[in-house]
Every structure is written in structure tokens, then in C-alpha cells.
Amino acid sequence: MTGSYPATRLRRPRSAAWSRALHRETVLTPSDLIWPLFVTEGQGVEEPIATLPGVSRWSLDGIAARAKEAVALGIPCLALFPNTPANLRSDDGAEALNPDNLMCRAIKAIRDACGSDIGVLTDVALDPYTSHGQDGLIDGAGYVLNDDTVAVLVDQAVNQAEAGADIIAPSDMMDGRIRAIRMALELGGHHNVQIMSYAAKYASAFYGPFRDAVGSRGLLKGDKKTYQMDPANGEEALREVALDLAEGADSVMVKPGLPYLDIARRVRERFEVPVFAYQVSGEYAMIEAAVAAGAGERDALVLETLMAFKRAGCAGVLTYHAPLAARLLNA
Ligand code: PBG
Image (tube, rainbow, N blue to C red; front, side, top):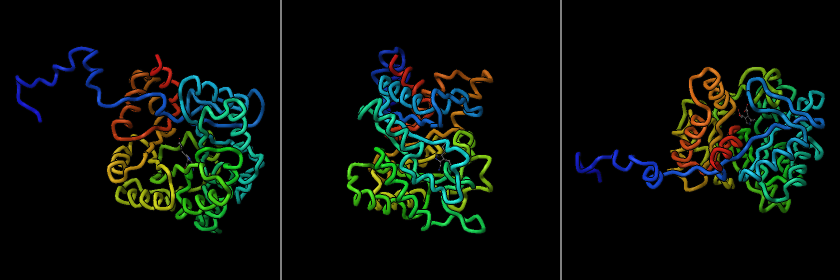
């Protein structure tokens, strides 16, 4: 109920910092954050990513150090993405199934460094491993084949689970892959390995810097519109989420983040499940570009955007600003 002025003055509770704190509806803490990290071969290697200023690819020793940093900051989970060496990329992305691939070694390096003090989320899709940069197997015309791809993704997911992944996050948008992966995980005894489905993932122009980071941008011909969603669609996102939940997803993701905040909200209202948002590489780059141009102040932009996800009902956010945000929130 809202009364009328002057009995009701909404500025009254805003008049002091303690009161604003008391009336705050939403909280953002480091435990709301998932930190995406890019892994590369070598030892002592840090490779800055030009289109993602402030973010680097790290070799395994660096990944272990970042994991320790995350634990110290109170960040509960890391998301891993490999920059597969060019000579290991192939038409069929077979390197994704190698138990000794970069991703699997990174999982183990984190486990060695931090034990079970931090969760490890691994991306399931073939784009970091294919010579054509698509997320799945393609036919002669370049069309990504659904069922053939799902069969490979199942093996990729099991490979990651065997290496110690805690959350399998299929980002490929193939139909039916959640059920197939869940069944394989159950059969393999991985009952407690979760699935966070990239349920509503859009064919977005905001993924450019990420594709630089995993080395797939130059390889990719065309787009991903035959499997990722049309940005015009909202109802369809709810169907995607419903299917993935029915197939066994423990949580769902909406991606990109801010441009699709309405989708995150609708999913949260329709389904009583944890909803995560991915503030993607292009969103990070936009904030950094604004800061570089003097158009805004980094700390405030970062915290405001992350709070927006919480206010919209998200359980958490994948963001490249995770360590900065955690430091600010811990201060
Ligand atoms: C791969 C994948 C992508 C992202 C996460 N997993 C890129 C794509 O679908 O082309 C994007 C993340 C980002 O831009 O930060 N399937």
C-alpha cells in the first residue's frame, strides 16, 4: 500500500546510509559469482586477450593460482574454457574426448590446489575443439547435426565428470542433450555431478571476445542461428527451459545477461528453480570500453549490473568481473 504525500515520502528512508542499508531489498555477495577462466598450454604462461582487456588465458599453474585466489575471495565456482592448440582441432572435435586434454588437466590442477573448496563448472560443446568453430558435428553443407552431436557431447560430459567436474554446463543448444547426458552420468555413477543447462542461449553478437579467447573466431564460418535462439523470442525460451528441466537439469542459465534480463525474470517466475545468467564477453567488453572512454566508473558499473541480475531473481551470475566484484564486496 502506498499512501499520499506528504504523509508518505519515499525519500524519507533514503535519507541516511544506515537506512538505505536497512531497506535494501536485494543482496549481492561473492557467493553469487561464477568466474569464467580461459586455459592455455604451457608453464608460467599468461596471454592477455586484446578484446577482453584485463582478462588473460592462463596455463595450468596460473589456473591453480586463480582458483586459490577465488577461494580466498569467497567465489564458490569457476567455469573453464580451453584454448585448444590448433593442431588438435579437427572436423569432429575428437580432442574433447581425450581424458588428458587441457580441460581435464585444468580440472585436476584446481582439485590439487584447492580440493573441494571450490566448484568446477565445465562447458560442454565442441567449438573449442573443432576446426570449423561450430559447437557440433556438421554435414557437407555446414549444418550442425543434432543427434550425432548429442552422442559426442555425452562422451565429452562423461570425460569431464571422470576428471572431476562438479557441474556440467552444456552450451551447445542441441535438442535432447540434457536427458542423454543425465542418463550417462547416472550410469557412470556420477549421481552428484550437476547439470546447469544453458537452456536459453541466444545467437548473439555479444560473444565475439570469447571466441577470440578460445581461438574459434577466425575459424567460424557463418553463424550459429540454426541452433542458438532468435533474440526476438521469449516464449520459446520458456519451452527450452521446461524441456531441459524435464530432462534433468538441476539449474538453468540465460545467456547473454543484461540484454536478456526479461527472460531471466520470466524463467524465474514460471519455474521455481535456480536461474543463472551469463554476463558474456561482449558485455564485459562494453563496460571496459565505457570505462576507457571516461563514460563511467568501473566499480560502480560492475556492481550495478551484477545487482540487476540478483534483483531480477537470478541465483547467481557468470562474470569475468567476478574477482573485482568479490574484492569490492569484501572490502
Ligand atoms: C560455446 C560458448 C560460447 C560462450 C560460452 N560457451 C560462445 C558461442 O556460443 O559462440 C560465450 C561466452 C561469452 O561470450 O562470454 N558454446
